[in-house]
Length: 336
Image 1 (cartoon, helix red, strand yellow):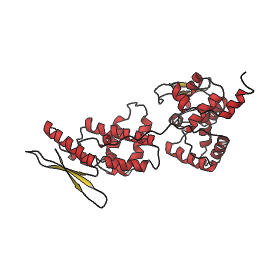
Image 2: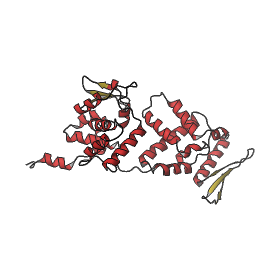
Image 3: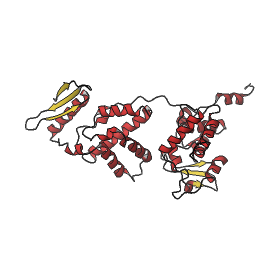
Image 4: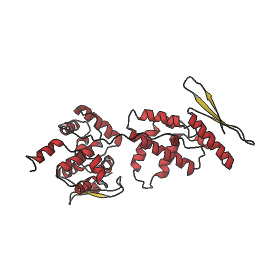
């Protein structure tokens, strides 16, 4: 069994694992967490017993940034669902200090510190997606590319508890205030993008990829392909949505709203601040839109046709928050 030596340091304790086998050199590595040291030692001993490689020189030459870049290059073009989201996630991660480490240095403590940094900006749900993505990238480096490391440290990091589903939508005069604030923005597309999202319940990724070729102008339909749930769908357009599309010029690349995810986040944040709207995210527009469609009197299948939800339970439980005041008006004088 590997020997673990604890050392006290100014910046916290370290744990050095020593693996000794007759006929082999002594292998040693230092960790910030005892669990990592034990797991490394166990894997090293197992590799030695099985006659597997214990040469980690190649892993020490690969920076995590290189791992993610190679992953993007090799996985590109495989038509994976959520690929745009993976590219965005990888580019975000490559700007973080975690990518200044090489693959052999990466430990669960480093990932925990990355978690602390990320949670200042994103939700636990988003971090869990980051962790899953990083785990897959490191697994591919180990099993597909043959870069030898004792174990994938991502597997030592627990996923965070998922918060309760959000139920935020625009309340009272918030929709009017938000649209007015967007109209005052220096970005000429923002107002139209917010209005179009409310009219169609479109996902942000679908909105940013939307091109003029995806519009059936004669039948007033929007054709969405390569969607999150893997199914293409034809979305009926309201007159307002149709006119918004008509008002946008045709660009060389065909995109209707030429914005990146980061720029949209920047301009939308400014508009929310100007409108004094708190705790509201772009994705909440989708819940707001679905709720409005139900309040307009559309049936569950009709709203599913527009929103693209395959499971009506998700649509009703997560993406619907009806206004009780409007229900009061519908009830009128009573039912008997």
